[in-house]
Every structure is written in structure tokens, then in C-alpha cells.
Image (tube, rainbow, N blue to C red; front, side, top):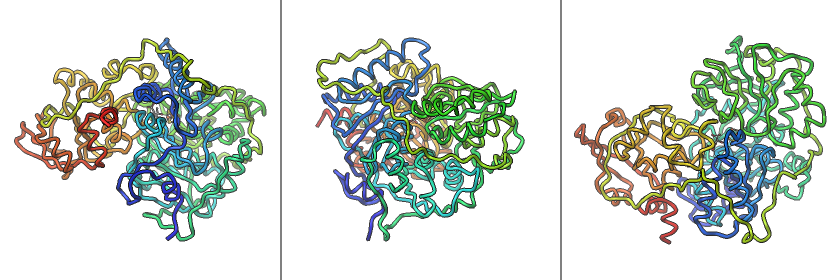
Length: 639
Ligand code: MIC
Ligand code: SF4
């Protein structure tokens, strides 16, 4: 039997375990990336491991999230990241160089290699055939130190692309179509491998838009073959030597096959407040638009920007619309500045912002109350843009630009002939915002600002664990609910005590107070608890608040790993209906916690209701050990 691409890369990198679906495997990691808002924690943890120099082929620390510097906090954090990177063999991409995933794709990623990044959209690298996975900071720290990265050996879904996209239908519509069909939890513990005749019709940035937003399916990652299109991209980036061909064997097998005929797709939109709430753009015709933002790691490539400039050229942005454009990297910005496209955008009335995450993570450009905001980003969770009452719609750059001109959501096919943009044969190469690590790390002094507070450490598990259910939340709770991120909070990513005052407040403003008054307790969640970002803060902050376990119907992959790494038990109901039986403030006792961890079977007692429920802990032996010892750091120290 032949192998698919995912199996080929996994086999080549397998260090621990066997490739049986669902069982845990440890893989060797070639590259890592961090960004600033998860990076401080990742490097503090890396320092705690006591490794002098990273053991990876290449590790890069990007600054792209915290770009406002409204006070010294995040400037201090940047200084810390810059110096710690220099000391330990890590490249440092300065603020202004662009969004980590965009820059990594352009300048660093290598087909066939493995990448873990402390950001959930790390799978963008799958656009050039990397096996690129998002993880919590601690897992990235361990990978930098040469440790394996662990995943459940995934199911591989073949997405068979046939046909060709019609004008005005885009890569964004392909991934929105998948989200429409499979939902935000349809990809958990799966890798999506793209195949079929349609693949070669898609450029690398288009492929990257798709693998990027595979994160919204909850997938472990997504990957495209590495073919002549990939070679041409790498050649244009002046790094053809990095090209490796990657294709599935003729007789490769897959766990599931999804067919998409590109010729049948239409322009799509994800409506508030979930990326899988997808409808045809024609169904939203006439919805008035207040704001349009174009950019983010999903849609900010050179081709995206050129298409937008082509649409805006000679027109004026509607007077009631604020159009904000953030090119994804310095390379893109510099190229559109040189060829005049930037000037067309400016002339049309667009507001140009620097290359970074910006509006996507609520770092500025929060819309007005009740506003409709069309965004080319990947997530439209309630409140993420900084305005709880606003409705964010996820769209392609084409829909965004055309709607910005019209003032209402517009089917771009009404605009006339599509804008053709060719991939450049040569990108503008200038890596002068990437600082190299020091030859002699010992001589570099790491600068630590006062905003960096020690991170909480888990303790060994006690055999009897008790407490109150402090909050009961519904399905699909995101890490943006658990640990909100916005312009006010992002500067405090190194300050867990401060952040703890905001934990789960979008669900219930009383939660932090309740946790403090009751000396911690439990969280009760529905399906897909913790979907979204990789931010470890969504585990570190509950740990700080004394959360001992989360009971849920199911968990999102990265958040579950982060809970375990921090010694918090993620327990899943054997019978989902038991969720209905439990209320806030119920007193819960877990007896025999340690032996239950070993068997993976729990009976939790609800003292208030005088009932008990069966729960399971579906984790590996390694993770069981981690929970008993009190998290990954303790478990490593013990060894
Ligand atoms: C996001 O898109 O939610 C973020 C901000 O990039 C996060 C990382 C973070 O919280 O710092 C992610 O996707 O992992
Ligand atoms: Fe940045 Fe948004 Fe991409 Fe997250 S999803 S990395 S915040 S651009």
C-alpha cells in the first residue's frame, strides 16, 4: 500500500510511537516559529528548560501581534524576545517585517519539513507542503530544545479538487465551503491533504489561504503537495534550493474523501459569529457595510493586494465605509509601493496600516456599536474585533473591496470582469528586518521588563479533588472567551495575575471573582470547548485561578493539550446529557483521582444533586503522567 503525503512526512520524522490512527506519536521538529503575544511565555518556558541553543534547523521569533505600544509593556516584551532570541540561536523578525505566517511562507518554510508554531494558524505553511502545526508555547519551547512534538496520529482526509475556479471565486471560498460542510469541529484530529487536478490551478498564496483557515475546522493541520507551482514560488523567492517534490503515491489510502468541484463554487461569506456560518454572498445582497478590513495571515499576499488595488483603481470608497488595508509583509508592502498599486489604494480612500495582525486581533480598528464589518480574516467570534455588538463577516479580498466601494455586501460578479493578477517571477527580496542570532550567545544579556511576571506552576495532583462548578458555558466556547485578547489586554500577555481578572468574562463577568472567592473550582463546557487560538494563557490563567478540571462534551485539540501541559484535567462526559444536570455552584468531588487518571475512567460526584456521572480522560500515558506530576515542566524536571 502506498502512502499519502502526511504519512510520508510523519514516517520520516517519527521518533516515538507507532503510526496507528488515534495513538500518540512523537515527531522530530525541523523548524519553530513564535509570535510576540505567545512568544514571551514560550521563551520564559524555554529558559526554564535550561537549553543553551535551539536544536532545530531554524527557529524564528516574529513580532506581529502587539503593534500598538500604548505603553512600555509590549515594547519591553519585544526587547525580551529580541535578546532571548539572539542568545539562544533564534532569528528575530522585527516589528514591521510582517505577519509570522506570511513571512514564514515567503522566506523560511521548506516543503517536507515539520514546523510547530505558537500560533494556531501555523498550518499556513502547508501551502508549500510543510507539515505545520499550531501548539501552545510550552510545546514549542520543548521542540526548540530538541524534544519531540506529540500529536494523535491523525486521520488523513483527502480533499479532491476538480475543475477550476470561476472569475471572482477564490481560495477563500474553497475553505469556506469546507467549513460550511464540516463545521468548526469537523476537523479535530484530522489532517486535510489536498489533491486532484484542481491543485495545480492554485498558486502558493491561494493554497496558504486554505491551509491557514483549516485551523477553523479544528484540524491538526492541512497540506498541499509540493509541485511545479511550489518550485516557481520558491524560485521567485530566490530559494529554489529549498524545493523538494512531494506527492502522494498513486495507491495512497485516506480515511475520508471530500470532493470539491471548483467550477461549481460561488463567492461565499461566513456570517457572525462563527466561521462555519456560511452562506452565498448573493443571499446577503444589500446588507449595509460600515467597515471593511483587508489583510491578516489569511489574505494579505501580494496577489491579494494586487487584486484589491485593481478593483479600487479609479474608484472611491463609499462615504459610509471605513476601508482598512494591511499588507501581510514588508515584502508585499514594498512591492506594491514600488509598482504603484499602493498609490491606487490610497487614492481610492483606503486607510493603510502596517504589516501585522492589527484588526484581526482587535489591535485597533474596532468597529462602531452594531456595525457590520467585512473582513478577510479567519475568525469572527463575538467580540474578537473589540466591539461586542458588531457583526463580523468573513469574505475574500474581492468581496471586501467591491463591497467597500458599493457600501453594501455585493456579489463581486456584478462588478464585471474579474481582475487577473499574475504571480511575480521575482519577489522583492530584502531580509533586513530579520536579525540573526549571536555567534556567541553567552555574551548576550537578556533584557526583562517589569511587566514580565512569573508564570504559575501546577502542583502534583491530589487524590481527592473538590470544588464548585464556577461557570457553565455552551458549545464552541473559544479561547477568545476564555482569555480575551484585545488592544487593552494584549500588552499583558506576560502578566498572568493581571489577565486573570478577565478570564471568561465575555461569558460571565463574575467568573474571576467566583474563582477567587471559592479558591478555584471547575469549569463546565459543551462541545468543542477551547476552539480557536493556541494561546496557552487560556490554560495558564485558569491554573492561576485554581481551576482543577474542565468538564466538557468535547475539547478542541490545542486547548486540550495546553490544559494537560498545565496540569488541568480535561474530562469528557460519557453521556453528554449529564451536562444538562449540572448547574453553576454545584459541589463536585472527584475521589480516587490518581487511579482514575491511570484507567482513564472517572466517576464524579455531584454532592448538591446527590448524583454521580461517568467521565473519561482520553489521553496518552505520557499525558496521564503529566497530569499526575503537575504539568509538563514538572514531568520533565522529574525525569
Ligand atoms: C489568534 O488568531 O487568535 C491569535 C491571536 O493569533 C492566536 C495566538 C494568540 O492568542 O496569541 C492564535 O491563533 O493562536
Ligand atoms: Fe494574527 Fe489574525 Fe493571523 Fe492570528 S489569525 S496570526 S491574530 S492575523
